Length: 425
Image (tube, rainbow, N blue to C red; front, side, top):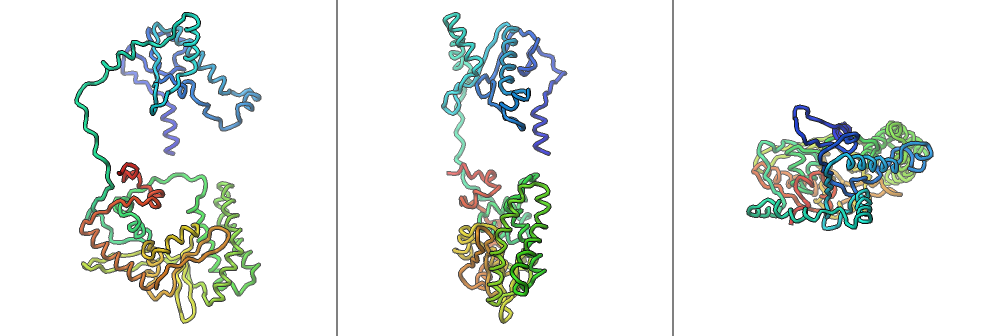
């Protein structure tokens, strides 16, 4: 809707009839059959007059010509005819354009290039007015040069006491670790990009649908080994087609995402059977959990999150699994440095009891891959909890929240323009 409104504003012409002036500011198409004492034509470069072919929604230029529809060549002819009519009906005409853009020559409109060439052939002189260049120094505003602005630095604002939340999600904790300024802007100031109408599903939509498909499948088949492979694949395929049906009905290109997942179904069933052979059984999925963490200063913080999957093993062991549709290489980078990505330790913490294993399950590419962080899950969870408690006390004490400037984080951060990342030294 905002894009439509912007287009309407751009296309509309406004005239303030309360102003009476001999000077008329108008467009070329509105000068037909009108006479002027003098005319000033602004921005007469090739990029604007006639400008590039804007392209058509239906048919290329050749097909349009065969069908008798307006073509770009006819538009150019109309512009040239309007220019000729304007010049003929005006006493004095001055044409201006920007000669240089970024130090590079900016070409004059071809209409005036031809007119200048004709004038040289007919009268032996061009149409350039050398007196205008001599007037430029006198037209410049005199005065002391303003000092240059200070070089931008990475911002590090403190957390306003009234905006420090009493609850944090797993994704919020991850944002705090990835870039404190991102956490400041996203969760304290509560800034976010405006929602936009999506015509196509993206990777996040794909992941959300796959999560729901796997949840429905394992509710129907808690133990896949109890059915044959063909039946398991057929049931998972049926659930996938149903889950993607809404997106496919809205846009046929969503069928490509469905086919991407359908191609992985045999590999997933094979992985699930192998996991059950190791003694693990699906126990629950999409579990919403929250716990309260006490801080060294006596404050309390509520930690929230949704666990994708919990498996039970021998001796009542528990494994926490997070489905990921990211590349294996990306996930491998997350687990190589325990504690840097806090998602798995937070989920282990949210379970509220002993956890034997945590892992990312990569659902991307041509095979299923498990990626687990090194170290004891309980020890990592305790360390993550203690660090969050100290960070929360620091937030309440007004500790700065600096922008880290890590390129792997900044490249996907919607706050990059707010922190002025591109203008730091």
